[in-house]
Image 1: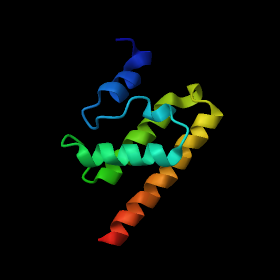
Image 2 (image 1 turned 30 degrees about the horizontal axis):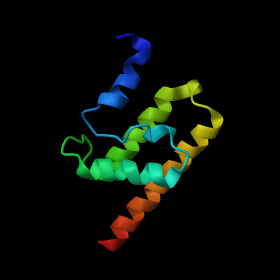
Image 3 (image 1 turned 180 degrees about the vertical axis):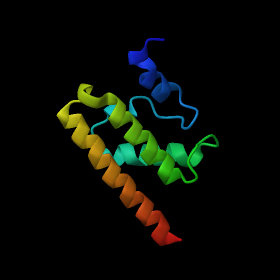
Image 4 (image 1 turned 120 degrees about the vertical axis):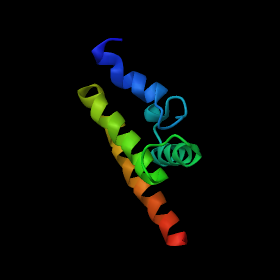
Length: 96
């Protein structure tokens, strides 16, 4: 495997979460956040202790690894998805 492709391999074949196909290319931050959270909640293999931390970790990993290859528009969508994840987490903790 080429070193340029290792992060793509991690994203696609991660032991942490089973992600929906193309989740990081979607245009709806709420949909991305819900999908990541559901993947984290349904995973028995996540590395972080909470689904929220696992979902946020995967999203941050993708943003950091995409780097300059990530267009400004999609970067904004993914940054907004981080905010949506925080809102979902707050809702869940408030309900408990």
